[in-house]
Image (cartoon, rainbow, N blue to C red; front, side, top):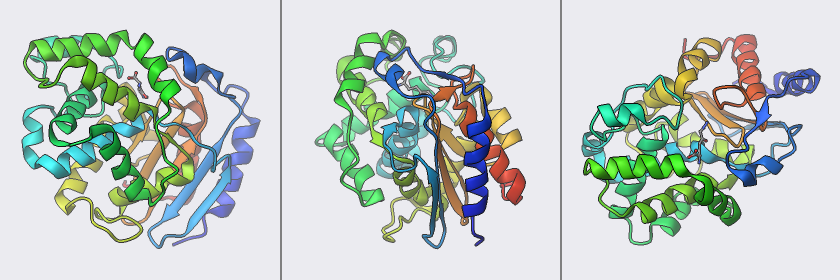
Length: 304
Ligand code: DON
């Protein structure tokens, strides 16, 4: 594999020159205090070699990026039966939209929109002894890093203002697609979104989707056909109503979060994560998208 350090140094310099850094998310009040000038990037290649620049060691709120990890855990536990509860089609809608849910009888379009992740949270709660601590241990185990934790302040902040997620959960419940009570499911969901990780930690977790289900320590977490499915869903649904644009500009499966993080990967080659808190109109990190577009264009490395 090539030496990615010169290109990521260039990327950091280029992002520093950008005047419009996007807008930090404020609908979860606790997220609005972040410095919009932060920028981190990290690449982990298939040989385990890490390249990083900027604020790549600083932890931030991963938000919707956690949806890939909860999908991965639920899928590895219950297998293909999962697709009876949630679909695999892009929604073409913002992450918190409700109208399709009503029309499609409480079966969310895919596991990476909020409604889909709420159903996945329900599945995990039904299948885990201690859902919140088991899920955190699962993530810590993949990254081999016990410093990954929930941010109780962010979880509480979202609980106070997460009205659309309450609306989605009650609508799903009304169709019988939520087995546990709404408060329990959303408490799990808000905690999963509140997980704090750095760019360096994120690439270690996403290494399993790049490396045929195996983590850096070579433990197996997913079967190969499951990795194929999760990467396909990241490509088609990982960026909500901007999934087409991300495939067009960047050309990698990936996932964003409103904390400003993005993780993407080229199977069997590398994982990359970026963090820049300012978001574009669609809720994806503005400079993160720019950085990843430059990375895949300048290196010629994408799935296309
Ligand atoms: O449920 C929410 O609205 C947030 N916890 C997560 C949203 C999110 O990260 C969407 N991503 N771009």
